[in-house]
Amino acid sequence: MLEGLGRTQRDLLYALLHQPGGMSIDDLAQALAVTRTAVRQHLAALERDGLVQRGATRPTGRRPEQLHQLTDQARELFPRQYPLLANLLIEQVAGLLGHEALLALLQGLGRKLAADLEHAVVDEARIVQHMNQAGYEAQVFFRSAGEPQIVAHNCVFHHLAKAHPLVCELDLALIGALGGGTAQHLECMLRGGQVCRFALSPGPQADGSRASTAANPG
Image 1: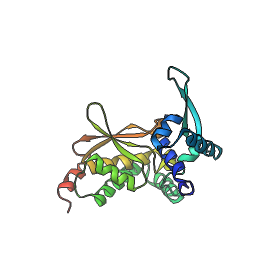
Image 2: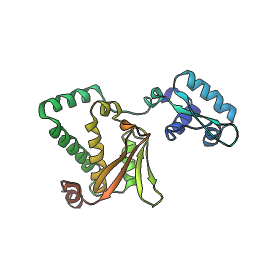
Image 3: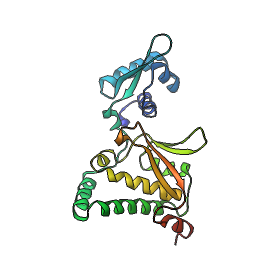
Image 4: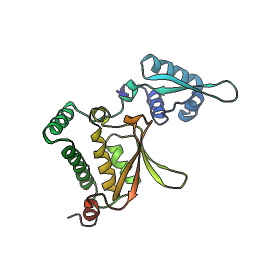
């Protein structure tokens, strides 16, 4: 677990988590406010432990810079919530009720979670707070047009969602219900994306339930 690492090594792993394309030694030295020598030493230790790997090189106009990335093993150190029981339950529900019923169930669970967390519509910053409390490493990212998006650098249901992609519908329903609209999955790590990226569209969800419960929580 991350708790077994030193502070600088934990900070280094968090820095790489937020830069899935990789970071150079200079990037890490600047981000962590330590020397390049210290970064090299920590990278060597983390590479030996299978937590960091060398990725692509980045052209600089001079000598290309070597980029460093997290390994899959390192990503497993970050919080995840997918107990074996959940996987077994989803398999049983899918087998007993079928695809459409499972989809409706997951969406309903997402809306219920939203109703338990908030009694009114909230903005992306508040949604990110809830996601981070659940174990995500998420943040609000603003596009050039000023439109906010929610970017998650990890998925607390990663392995569960790999086996049952419909699990993503729970997140979409939760985010959409909290934001009083419809959540769109613009990028997904399960589908080859580097992050999970969500955008909120205004207006009620397809069943209209959140708009009414937000205005009349009772």
